Each structure stands twice: as C-alpha cells, then as structure tokens.
Amino acid sequence: IPQALPTADAIDLRKKYVSPSLSLHYSEYKPLHIVKGDGLFLIDDAGTHYLDCINNVALVGHSHPRLVQVLRQQLANPSFRVSPDGTLLPDDRLLEDYMAKIFRTVPEADFDVILFLRSGSEANDLALSIAKAVTESTQVLVLDGAYHGHSQATMCLSTYKMNQATTDSTYKIEADAVIVPKPDIFRGQYKDPKTAGQLYADDVKAQMESVLSQGKGIAAFISEPFLGTAGQVPLPPGYLQTVYKYVREAGGLCIADEVQTGFARSGVKFWLHQTHRAIPDILVLGKPMANGHPISAVMTKSELVKKFTDKHGPHILNEFISDSLSLALANTVMDIISDEKLQENALSMGNYVLERLKILKDKYSCIGDVRGIGLFIGIEIIKEVDNVKVADGVMAELLVKKALLEHNVLLREDGVDHNVIKIKPPITFSKDNAETLINAIDRSLHSLTSS
Ligand code: PMP
Image (cartoon, rainbow, N blue to C red; front, side):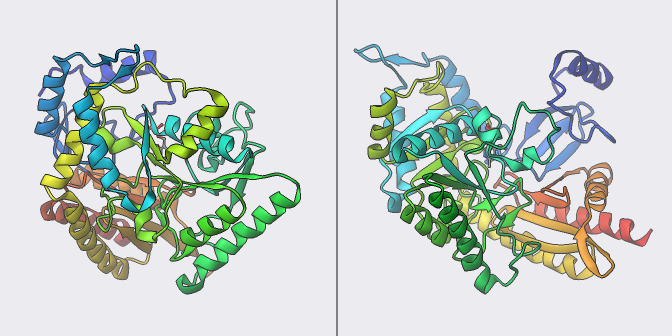
C-alpha cells in the first residue's frame, strides 16, 4: 500500500485546496480513502478491498498490467512527432493502428474521420458545433433528464444538472434547446413497449414541427442510446431509429453520445446504438477510451467536417490533443477488449446479473424495475403511496450505504429522483464478483425491509 496521509488530514487537505464541487462520495457516512486499484477492486489506506460496481471509466479494470506497461514505455518516448509542415502528430504507426481498429467497430456508418479531444464534454461541444455549422441551424433536441457535459454549451443542454441547479443564472437551459420527453416506459407517459417507441418518437416529431413553423431550423438531436445519468433508462424499441429518420427529414443531424455506453459495455454490440439499428451522423466517445487516461473523440464523415472547417477555418486544436501516449493507451484498451473477450464477458455477466436481480425483484417490493443490457444495469427503487408507485430515493441511499459499510461493495444512486441504483462495473466483472454484488444487495435489502 502506498504511503498515504491519515484520512482526516487528506479530507482537510481537500477542503482547503480542492473545489467543493468535487464532492466526496459517501462522505456522509464513510469517506473512502482509496490509495490503489487492482482489477475490480479499489483498496483503501487500511488495505480493505471494495468491489467497484460503478466505474465505467476503468473499463478493463483498475491498473491493468498491460496499460501500466504501455504507460511506462510510452513515457520514455517523445509524445509528439512534428511533421514537416510543423503540425503536431502522434506516432504514425500508432495512429494507423488505432484507425484500423476503431473504424472496424462501425462498418455500417461510413465514418472516415476522427477528431481527438480530452473529455466527453469537449467532444459533445464539438459535435454540436459541427451540426450547427453543417445545418446552418441552431435548435438542438435533447432528452429531458439528459447529461452531456460540463462545458457552457453542454451544461445548458443538460436538464439533469439544471433540475438540481440553483436559481443562479450562470447556467440556463439554452434558448436553442428543445427538451423532448424522456422515453421512459417504466415511469413515463407511454408504458407499452410495443407502442411506446413510436409514440415518443411522434412527440419529438410534433415538437420539431412546432420549431420549424417558427421559422427556425433543426441542427441536431443528441442522446445516449441508453440513458445513464437520467436513471439507467433504456430507449424503447424502434424509438432511436424512428427519431433519427424524423430528424433527418427535418434537416438535422443525429448525435449519439456513447461516453458512458460505448466500448463493448452492452455486450451485444461494440456500440450500444448499434443494438437499435440506428446509425448516427456523429458518434461521441469518451470516458473509458483509454481506461481513465483523458482522451475522447468525435467520429463522423469527412464531408461534414469539411463543411464545418470551410466555415470556421481549421478546428482549433487543443495543445494536448493527438499525443502518442493517449493513443498508445487507447490502442491497448482495444487490444485488451479483444484479447480478453470482454464484449462476450459483458454480455454473459450482464445477463447473469440481470437474471439474479429479477429474482430479487420478486422478493422485495421496493424493487420496482430491473433493466439493462450487458454491464449497464439499473435497479429502480420505489415505494407505494396511496396505491401509486413513486420513487424512493431514501431507500436507494440506504441500500448504497449498507452495501458499502457491511459488504464493501461500491454502488451509487442516480437518476432524476436519485432512486436508481446504477451498476456499470469494469467489464472484466466475473461470476464471483456477481455473487458478491447480488449477496450484498440481497442481504442489505433483507435487513432494511425486515427492520
Ligand atoms: N456525456 C455523458 C453521457 C456523460 O456521462 C458524461 C460524463 N459523466 C459526459 C458526457 C461528459 O464527459 P466528461 O466528464 O469527460 O467531460
């Protein structure tokens, strides 16, 4: 275990120097003093191992030995190669290698260009700028409850954050944002999975028609293909395909934000939007791309980027984009997913966890819904008030607390009402890990509901 400050001193240090917006998870009952990661586990200063069921950044597990090795090797090499015309480029073999691997994951999309950035927020920002430039329009359709980042533009599209915000006017939902209903078949307006996709898509169409009738144009529709922060909400069958069709008919572009859902997590396909047979015009990649090292990207068609650059000049490059270290790590993540058959693992372990959770749903009335695909899973915690099922954020928090304090399992509640337990562990998750998780949820709910 590396030398660490005593926990109380570490907390004081944070309070003194670190922005309060970087809140400590579990601070109300047990601020964790994590000093190390190893596979599925985070380890605190006392050597206690916590099963990490929430970290969708450390996709292939914490401190994967192959990534540690590549990091060491790559740091000894110059990070940039300067091309004859003075442009900074990453090592060309690494670039060639990565292009071959990443474009192979989306053969159906005709993507032929990738723009590297550092965070999901920056990538969504750029995707929106491209869409606005290409369509010469301003209006962006976004789902209620969505989160797409912390930059000014993305924050002002993210009602998940806005709903929590104060009356402060620093951030306001943009005048250009068109908030469309969250297509939630558990708690939303339309509940029948057979018809909900079409009905929710028709609502989007109606809102677009209203925008168009005011003489404004549609720039884009942006959404995750399975809503994360909004409460682990799946999109109903047919929804994405139909909305994409309507948006294109109205002249807009379709942006898939796969910052959380991408890189084989769904198990079924490499990208979760592919499970909807919907093809976006712009695909946004982030978080797990290099397993925690900051790199993100926009993948799209060069004809769209050309229209954007014709208008605005070359995309202004961030100083740290296109470096070899990030690409080497991103490349190795792709190799690990393939060599360790992690897409297949995400599917089989995801199905196993879902099956076991559905058994718990029959056992505990506070589990209103269990849903997911691969290792992207949500448990909706509810209670009945006057025969109506409502969100129970308090119970969700108690479950998180018990799982941590009594079983060393890391979970988080999320969603607009903070009542959805999210499960999105590294996709190296094993059957043993699944047993630990299910046991922790079962025993925690047992003691919470029988007291
Ligand atoms: N999009 C989604 C769906 C996200 O979950 C996040 C981060 N939680 C972002 C965008 C922003 O990514 P970043 O924090 O890397 O800026």
